[in-house]
Image (cartoon, helix red, strand yellow):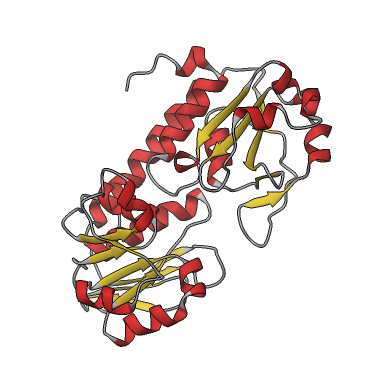
Length: 314
């Protein structure tokens, strides 16, 4: 995808956004560098090979890039995943000595950890351990994020193929509903207790739209720069007659049940609730910046258009 020559990769310099720009250097000097979301420049003279990942998406994507032995530690939440259960787990609450004892050459975090635990980050860096803070907010940024992970781990070719494969499959899913003249209108819940939905540009809405759904809450605005925004019950109910399907992510971020949604005061006027078209979707396949987002697209497609998505080969 990219020429094998020296270049600088800038990965989101400010805020929660992630933007990767490739600027080719005029010199032929070996090595790559990238700037992460904390603004630090990371030079990659050789692939990092002893990696601790403190964010589940990093762990999943590294594994997808063909890395296993190189992952020497994962976040505590990942230790419950059978794919990573044999890996030692680490937490940003841990004493830095636990990290130092594992002898990592790279610790992958995300901005929330960077901002919340600066003492740990500084201690690791003083000890010569490279720290990279990455977290994409949109699908376009996700592609660049995969390339950045590939650059750090020496899997650039695999990362480029990952992007191409993902884009090809998304194009296929989109093609399935091109002939649908009356597409399903959907409200996609992010957090039930606060009546929050996803904002335009989010991965969850990308999955919904790639599956042929129409987001009824397109006027939702971001809350504190995230991809989730306040919407409120009154605005949800104002769309009640047009909501064909009510989707809700379910997981740590939204510990909701079908009963909670159906029994919510006032929700009885929502068309989808009356017609029993309320569905829960694992947040891991619609909110994480990983290849499993394809599974989210397909799952939503099977709900909205079972006649088109229901008989696809695995």
